[in-house]
Image (cartoon, rainbow, N blue to C red; front, side, top):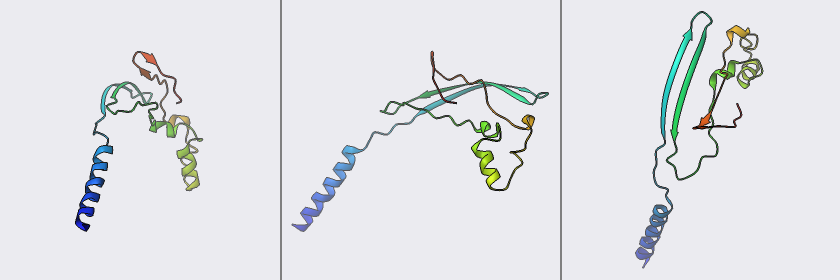
Length: 118
């Protein structure tokens, strides 16, 4: 009787896992970049198209895009504050021409523009 209870318990556990597991899916992301370097002004100009296909069963309400170069934009960013806390003030006192950042962002879910915080 004990073996039967153990067998039923294991079967019930495995059955619960199988029935509640979500099907496997893989997201798809494709990138197309057109970049131009102005080596006199030390500037990059780029058009980047990111095609993202959501294959999950859930709707995406938010997509986060981390713009790493904007961490160098001015002396109020989280990166600069952290460096100052660690005793490194080089970026805090950097001149504007020594900094980098991304501007002129235009996010769309084709063909509609997005309302975004950036």
